Image 1 (cartoon, rainbow, N blue to C red):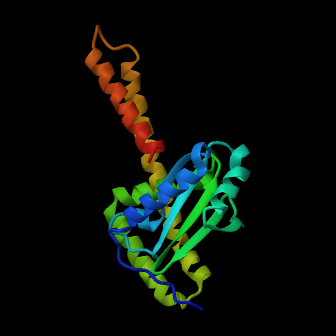
Image 2 (cartoon, rainbow, N blue to C red; image 1 turned 180 degrees about the vertical axis):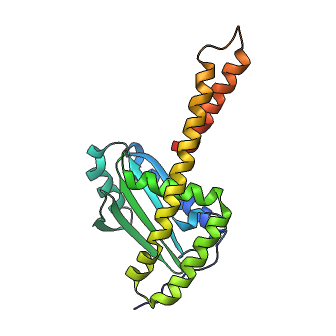
Image 3 (tube, rainbow, N blue to C red; image 1 turned 30 degrees about the horizontal axis):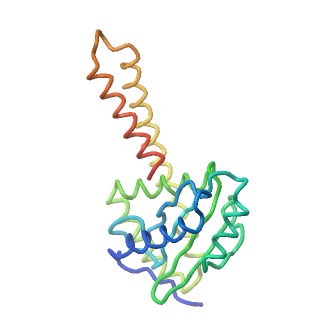
Length: 209
């Protein structure tokens, strides 16, 4: 078995993502709703396998067959449905590669991957612990990818639990803030404007990362 390689964070990873994002966006055109950098290479400072992971969300489930054809024609190898209604593609280069996952707009796994990514971005200590776990598993796995992936399951599930708790607290805080703005006292336009800006910022962070 080929050894599992976990390397130090490479500052070139965001640039590589931006390049492949532009290429995929051009191939898909109006079929793509969003293209997100996910996985460990999307978290600044986090050690990772040198693979750029990206999630492509199609505008609807109906256009998925057309999107699959468009990505396959763009020098990606198609690996079919990997479960959770996510279609996988790869492209390899010397020293690094790309893993692309295509899904519809309501895909649960995609939302969880964004939650996991954002929580690690916001909690460097958690990201450091994840890096240590991955390095240890890579050494112990002796090339066994199932062992490596399975060893991360407990950490990933706990991180998702923490991320969802943080999300729920943020949503509750926003609802409390909005409740104050339902009928601002007098002509308190400043308060209403503050509520509106907080609302937009929350939604941007939640859905447009």
